[in-house]
Image (cartoon, rainbow, N blue to C red; front, side):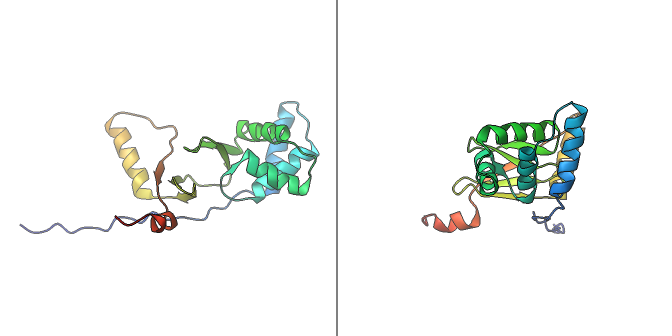
Length: 168
């Protein structure tokens, strides 16, 4: 029996994405709040600038710390309200990983991606894999299902934490 040729699986790779600049985000947010009769505020602009200048997945506490480095008079309630507005406007996506803390990531100027989450150090690694996307589409079609959105989160140990584990 002849062996079937095997194609190597595609590698999950972290791909940099072009995030929106703080100025672009501020412009889109100001349009959104003006449509709703809300006012633009200096504090909100500072929070938006700080959020869109940062990378990764920020909790409100992490964002608050960065914001207070720039203006110590901005409080947690203002940051919470601003992040709710950013999420409601579609500019930020709340993520609920297993650590129980809501984290936010920019939702504009980004490609769809999935996450690897370390259960030890809580590192979050973003990746894109076209084969996974194709398989999800295939499974949905096989079941007559229309996917409108999805998220894939894989939990385990990152390379660094694996080296810290005792050998068995």
